[in-house]
Image (cartoon, rainbow, N blue to C red; front, side, top):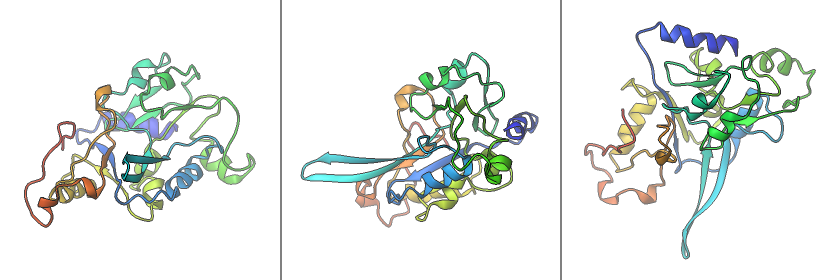
Length: 245
């Protein structure tokens, strides 16, 4: 964790900034929980702690009912309320938009947990890990990044991003429902995906925009909700108010 926190200062000193984001295509998600398992292994979270949950939701009114799988994780907000709430200044937002909890500074007050409107911060009081505590994987890879008795959450796998890799959940998804990248790079995979899907009338949306947190994470709704009149057309994609590219 120290290295990814230190990266915060490096990015501050670098005039060329990125704006990292994850887009989840709900049409592609099949609710397999591969992302959940990959996240648990990467972060060593115990059995009852999940950074990458997948909600199983029934939507609509009978007889027009459909089942949706909605993956949720930290939204790495542009205006994160958790950062403002922390009395120990343990939460930082890097210049690439990734929000991190400094495991050394956190004192486990839980203020960030209460402040997050998405319920995506966990305060783990007990000493518990994914595998046995004496496993080399836990000792050498997980414990140097995460501490017990403090607040934890998704980090967009910042330790992987800093090495030029995708987050573990993105790699594990068998249907490529998770698209990750730099929104400020028009040639990044996420930027190109948004443009291409926009040609069919599918516009990204963000969870709880009324909370005013300006989350970087976003979603694409089911194909059934798109404007069928746009199928196959190459019109300019509409732009939602809460999405700025």
